[in-house]
Image 1 (cartoon, rainbow, N blue to C red):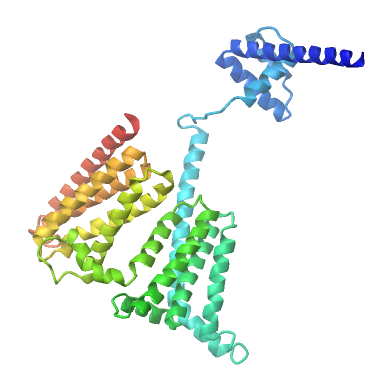
Image 2: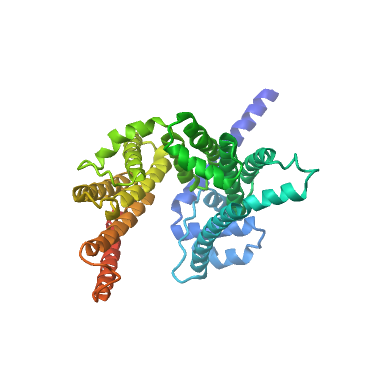
Length: 432
């Protein structure tokens, strides 16, 4: 008997719950957008502990008659199932606040960059003096502790600690400075250990000397190994602080340094860089330009391979590689690098234009706004450089009376490019 009563009770309860649910659903389906907005505001007021009586009396006439329980359940359902999309009105305080926040974020980025440059400059300027002071003044007690060799290892550990603990710092500027200090210490002290030269000026000279040197092992030790250590450290930073996207660019640079410093590339360069310099071997061209040309060809191949993967995981790496390639093409296409081969100069202009157009179409196809802006800015810089180079064929900017007309032409060119960028932006971002 008890089981039968319990079964009847459960059935009645489920039917009652279903009736209430159906009633709420029917009420929700009859509400318009303004009524839902009112219920959403009511739910927000309730959740923040405000008295909602006056608010409800003000809007009660906008709704059909239902009790407070149904009203509260409707407000709860509207609140739970709503997604707020807020667009600040023009010239409002909130819009000004959002723009101010954007401006201050860029100021933080700039302050972090300036602080990093200042720290590196200070280290370069006072590093030898600091070590010499420690050795001379704190001897003999600290003579062993602060010997150049032991101090190098200590600073290497400090660099690793800066990387490890810098990733858990919440404040952006401090985190960026600490992490880059750690990266600098890892690179400099690992280079000092591998070269066995414990002064900055000496192991920087070793790097320059060994890159073109005849001993492959010395090149690997002094350039590739430190770059691999920095690359691993950057991978750790990216894993723990993925929101700081600029580390994607730094890891690409360190990765390129680690790979391209391998000695076998020196013997392959003479077969690679003619892809960009196909006409008349120019023996007066700087050797570093040939290396840059070979590295650019290899990087283009890597970008093409990654682009055909159509995998969003490679988007940041592609953006970093493309930005470096754009800079490389701008350098390689300069007239100063082709003083004795006009055909190579013309060929590089054609290749650069084709590359910029391909990058623009690719970034538009995969909707990578970052690369779109890179290509637009690079195209503007390329046009300005070519404008200046055209006049350098006939006259010197610093001489003659036509420099004012040249500046007027540059102003008109900038105005035309600004109009062109606005038109392209409208076509890319508004029309589509």
